[in-house]
Length: 203
Image 1 (cartoon, rainbow, N blue to C red):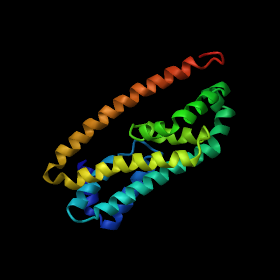
Image 2: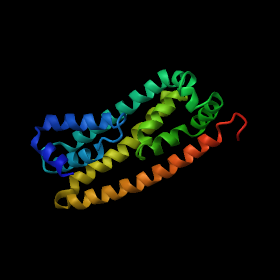
Image 3: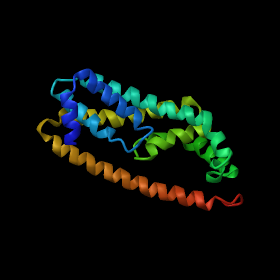
């Protein structure tokens, strides 16, 4: 946190916007990048008057959605071929694709919206939505809504933090740990369902 604060406060405003855009985009590919921390600090800097809070939010929101849509497009273009041939076929056999497609057909919008709040799933859900053939009209709205809520809250919290930045960061860390725990439980459930459905005749 201190490193992010030191880095961003020393940069000119345009460079801060670039860092925020980069973090919001790349976290769709490399979830380990601490984009949330940088975005919270960006909101804090906006509260100091160095940045425009609305512009910071717009940059983060648009680039995050663009990054997520980019990996969705890649999943739609290459995902099915990857999982239908070679090593990918071992991960998801043909009979499981029907179940995946049925799941996204019924729950795709809700899954994308909820998944964008969960570490790990945030990057994976758009990829599998594309691979499962979900159309853009059902992918873009939940991406826009979830990203607006999450990053809008982060920028707003940073903006109003003032002298309470450490307390806000601590609260964010607790929230992230809770969401990570939910992600782990959900990942275990998905792994169990995947293993249970490996046989073509499994329920």
